[in-house]
Image 1 (cartoon, rainbow, N blue to C red):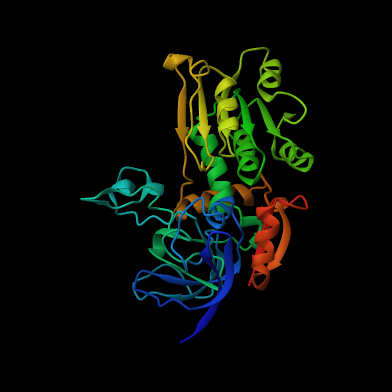
Image 2 (tube, rainbow, N blue to C red):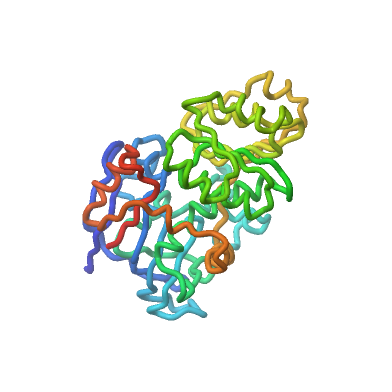
Length: 357
């Protein structure tokens, strides 16, 4: 049996490199040889035991690679072709997909509906931090990579870019809007870039790390707020002359940032929540105006599928955004445990790491 190296969840606090069999390929599947992947904040939640997955699961959901083998029923692709697949790999036949919510591709059963069903890699099936990954429903999910783009240029498309842009899209940003983006990690930076592309006239980026605030300006922020020096709510209200922002995007997953995002909204504004929360959220009565403020609170799980990936790569190819600069560190798959240690502890100004088998 042919074997491969893979980053495997053992128990909370332990993701290790181990040997696993190379997956068999079914009729609608594609086996992709990974050329570059990365670590996501959600993977850190898994590492810490804050999001449960099965022991022995290969982690990771951001694959860039080359088709190694195609299933017998797969058409329109060729072995040796460079491809990406989104973190969300919808079947396109489920009820959720037919209702236009491909990211929620969970199967309805007599026991109820399973949320997050479209997120399979590194969640319910083996993921991308390995030498190979099996992509199910390949014709719905594999997107060819343009020859003009490098692995690192498209590395953010499967999740980070799709999620950040999704937060801006869900917020329904309009030309001329004022937007606040809380937290300028990779997802927040992509939300900032997405807000600029959607026509926001004033984008206010909130963080405390100087390198991230500098990157936020590169992504399109007009103002930056260092929350370690000023109260971000007071400062955003000052910047907007007391009006508040049209859209606030929360990209960290903490009560404090969620509440601050709600407090800076204008009446009738939208809070677009992208954070992965590991505890209960409370909505303050005054900030919520007792439910009478005409606010909208919306959540987003990044859209997937090949058309979403094609669109994101088209934005990159057009030169409107350059996310390759977000790759700050590079590791071999053999050093995945060191990569996790760096990324989970946010040392050395890390934004994203590129992992190459």
